[in-house]
Length: 294
Image 1 (cartoon, rainbow, N blue to C red):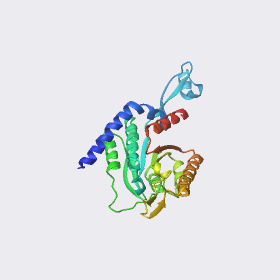
Image 2: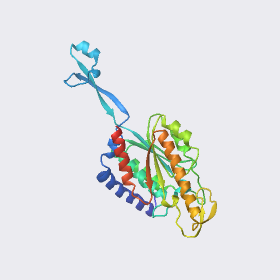
Image 3: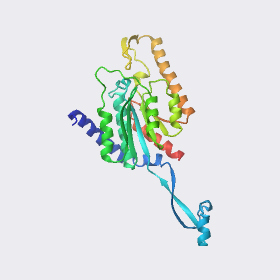
Image 4: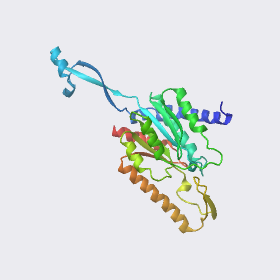
């Protein structure tokens, strides 16, 4: 049984997801993720225009006529969503919390994957693995995934940090095949570089960064008591002080540049999402970019 409030959330996500996937994203996902390779289909007689490199010389010798091998794309993918539910996601200054935006994005992408007959799995994490749903197909499975994302709640009073290495290391242990993995987080974390590099040796990893505008700069509104969402540590800040505001903005820019440098050094794809802007265009832009590389 689920609460009426959660049921309304899931229903709302379902309505928006159906519309976005069917009317806006249609075809973009499939074009961006075309499969992991080619598999043998059959041998047929050579036709004008066929690539001579596909000639099957053994069959050709037996039949005294040229035959070629044909292949088909191995379309089925295994797609895994790693969703960060650490305490820093419980922040939002423009209507939606970061973890609410994360849930919507994961739902839309997961539904796109299911519509293209891909398997979908889910890892919910903070500084530990909190939920794991192994990859499967089917509409009922996808709503289980969405329900898990939306209904996951921390223990009362619990402060959860972020360990981005945890889901990467976990999936590396439980998965014996290549996956397309979306890592959805605000990336307020340290020490995950080695785990990312190791994971990318076997898997296709896409980072989706979720950022609230108040994490980029502070408004000049006087003294404000801020609290570290993951440690609970408070700090009093004078936002009228221009040096304080400049230092805060500079810190965000420095961390963003370091993250960008890391992703670029590994040729790792990323989608940047800001909670005060639509997330559809960044996702579509990413799909188009992937399609051009195919």
